Image 1: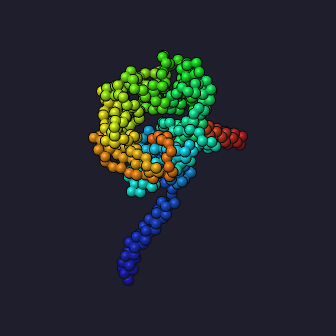
Image 2: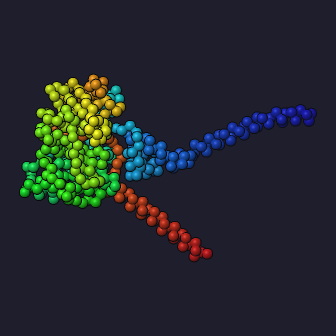
Image 3: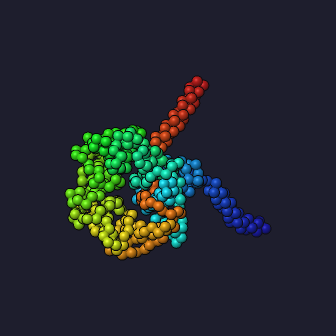
Length: 421
C-alpha cells in the first residue's frame, strides 16, 4: 500500500514541475511585456539605431515616447544623421505665382506606382501681402535659400519648418539697382555657421563683397578679398556650395571668361578653374549645377543637352562628357552615373526622366503639379533635420539651465544631509 502511494506521488512530480515551469514562463512573459524598450536596450544603442533610420520614418518615431522625441529633436542628433551614408531623399522645390510652392520627392516618383503622392503643396515660411519677385536660389545641407530682391533672404528647412529672415537692406541701399549681383550660400564648419554672400557694385562703380552670418546676425565686409574687379555681369548670379567653397559659372560668350569662379570660405579668397576645352569659345551659354557631389556644366545645342561633370574636384582632366538627345535640365546623379533630369513642364505636369551614361532614356515619370507653373524658380535639395544656428543655441541653453537646476537641487539635498548630521 505504501509502495502504491509512493508510486502515485512520484508520478505526479513531473506534472507538478511542468505546471510550475509554465507559471514561471508566463510570469516571465508578463514581466517582459511590462518592460519598455528602454529597459531592454541601452540608450546609446537606441541612439545608434535611430541614426540609421531614414528621415521620412523619423517623424513617426517621434510619437513613440517622450525620450525618442527628445533624441530625434536634438540638433546634435540632426548633425550626426546628416553625415551618415544613408540613401538621401532628393526633393525639387518650386515657387510659382510668388506665393505658391510645391515640393516633389523625385525618388518617390520613380519608385512609387502612384506618383500622385510624390508632389505636395508646401506652406512657405513667409507671407507675401504684395506680389514681389521671390525666387529660390540654392540649397546647402538641407536648408534652402530664397531671395526677394533687393531687401532680404529667407533661409528655410522645409522638413522641420524652421526658418530665418536675413536682411541686407544696408547693402541694397548703397548698390546700383541696375548692376547685377552675385549670391552664395554655404556652411562654415570651423564656426558651425551658415553664411550668405552678396557681391554688388555701388553707385560709384566700386565692387563690394559682404558676408551675412546666421549665427551672429551680423554682416562682415570682405572687400579685401577682391584683388581685382569681379566683373559681376560675367557670372551667373546663383552660386553653388561644394567642398567648403561657393562656385559661380561664366555666363558670357567670351573665351577669356570660360571659367568657374570660386570663393573659399575658410581662406577667404577667390580663385578660378577652367571649363572643359570643348566649352572654350562656345557660342552657347553654359549653366552650373551640382551632380553627385561634383561640379557640372550643361548647355543646349539644337535639341540636345551637353553635360560635363568634373569627377575629381579641381582636376581638369576629370571632366566627363554626357549627351542627351533632347533638351532637359540635369538635377542630380542616381547610382553614381545615371542622370536624373527635369525634361519639360506641360502646364501642371512635370516630366522627370532618368538617363544612363550613354544618354539613353532608362525611365520617365509624369508628376501632376498642384497649380500651373508661371515661373521656373526651383532648386533641388537633400532632405535633412539640419537646425538653424539659433535653434542650436536655444537647445544648448535649455540643457544648461536644466543641468544647473538639477545641480541646485543636488546642492540643496546635500545641504539638508549635512545639517541633519
